[in-house]
Image 1 (cartoon, rainbow, N blue to C red):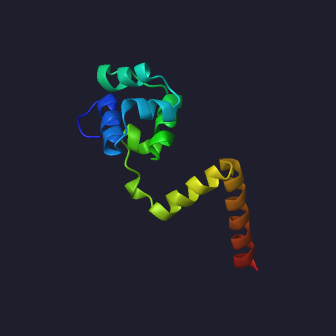
Image 2: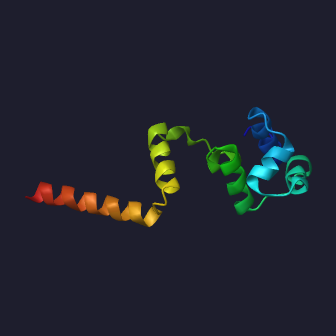
Image 3: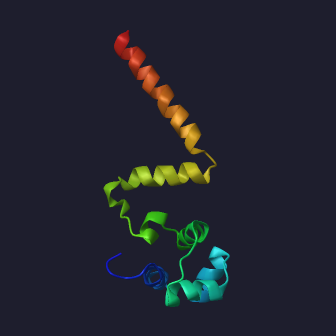
Length: 110
């Protein structure tokens, strides 16, 4: 995110997507005034607002808050987003991984 404030960063992301402040506010289901305050006056958005903005911008939350997800394989990131969009919970994924781990353990022991 370099030296930009969070609001400036959000504005940069919005402009990079060629969205007006009205368009992004509408897509994120927040008021135009609230988004303007975040972008121009540095008011701090809530976690819920950041999530709404990320969804509206079609980017991971990490890109808004400044953490680069580049350490992650993009295919894995896409798979996790697809799973989330399908309604698969983190707990279900954790259960699946535990089951697969258990199967590998049995295979090694057997």
